[in-house]
Length: 182
Image (cartoon, rainbow, N blue to C red; front, side, top):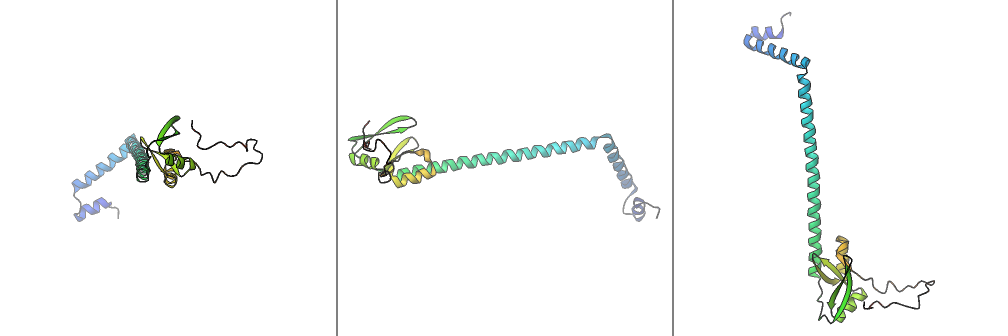
C-alpha cells in the first residue's frame, strides 16, 4: 500500500513513466504559480472580464429598451395619423374662420359655417397629425387623446355639460358667447 497511485498505474501499464513525470511537473508548476501570485492575477483578470461582460449585457438591455420605446412611439404616431386621416371632415368652402392655438401661436382654420358651428358645439375637434392639422369628429379626437394627448389641439366640451351655473357667480347674468370672433 505504500505505492502511490502513479506507481500503481505505471506498473499496470496504463501510464508511461514519461506521462508520470509530466504530470508531476505540472503539479509543481501550479503550486509554484499559486505561491508566486500568478493565480491571483489570472483570477483578477477573470473577474474584470466578468464585470466587463455584465456591463455589456446591461448596456445592451438599456439599448433594447430604448429601441422598444422609440418603436412604440412611432407606432402610436402612426395610429394617430391613421385615425386623423380616416376620420377627417371636409372643411367646406372656407367662408368662415375659426381660431385655435398650436404651440403657443394662434392659428386660423378657414372652414364653412356648419363646420365652425360644430367646432364651437364640441361635435368636431382639431388635431395635429404630423405637420398637418385635421378636423375630426369628437369621438375620434377622444381616441387620439387616449393615445397622444398633445395631438389634440382643440376639443370643446359640449355646452350641455356646462349648463350648471354657480349661484354665487356675480357674472352669471353676463354669459360669454362660445362663437365670439377674435
